[in-house]
Image 1: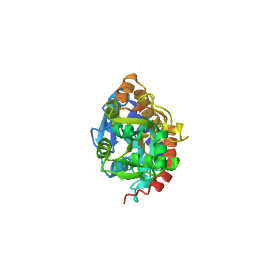
Image 2: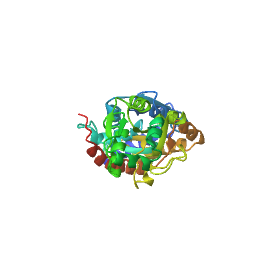
Image 3: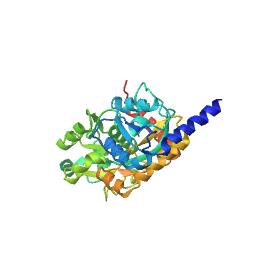
Image 4: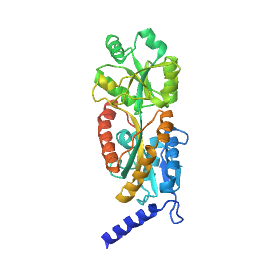
Length: 322
């Protein structure tokens, strides 16, 4: 009886997604665990439009709060029928499990991957005037200055446990240097502090840093992706100096654990087709985001590897949120 019910649930879920825009199908709800208007929200809405022909109507449901945990928990607790999916991100599925003392969900057990959507490289940037004053024009220069002037450098981030904080701590560990971490209440105040010269360097996502790089106010020294990115030509990856150094901002799509494999496969194909459309790449590149795409199994493996990678980094940073 249990096997029969399980089979019926699979067939029902597949049937629900089989004919897009049919009267029988409810709209798919895509939960975004962040506020409207940001890059994660914009890319989700763009993809929702592109999959309309294959999946039907996809409604974006923003559930922000607690570093993304509120929205992620709503995804985890939804029915595993393919009609509720959601956004996963570096924070919700790789960092928060180690950063927060109490988590409302298990990032490794409560979700089924659909596809990785995008990757946004982070970039090590300095105030252009300060870089000129200190004669720092490369990562090698920065490390050399830190070693010959111990305790003189500091760096800013959007807060304890943020991507910029963790990337900065990883750089300090790899390079064997000290730089004082100065946390701010969000990425924008941290960038303003860098622009004013209050801090010496930041590691920020490329989408946020790009306008000030373009204007010449900030100097990019390196990207933190494993390889160089075409979004910032001529800027080397930190992995060139420190092999294996890779801290990107990424996000993707997940469903509640227990969602039938045929449903995951159908969702994955639809969103991957949308991700690989030339129009999508052009639009995402304006947001300094690189479309990725993956199978459900590949994305599950990727998220597990990211969680394992961030555990020692978060521990070494000393960051905790109660």
